[in-house]
Image (cartoon, rainbow, N blue to C red; front, side):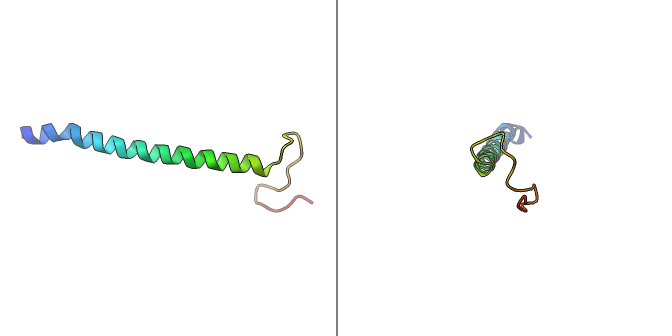
Amino acid sequence: MSEQVSYLPVEMLVEMKKQTEILERMERQQGLLIQALAEEQGEDPDAPPMTYMDGSKVI
């Protein structure tokens, strides 16, 4: 029983590292998405959008 207890913190650490890697990957992907959306909107933040949220062009 004592062997299982000694491995528990190591297993928890491994899982925490995996979760941290997943969260860091999500952070990078969201940052890229935000950057792409910002570039798509153009330079003037007060300009009307060029497309609707579904991607169709504004006429």
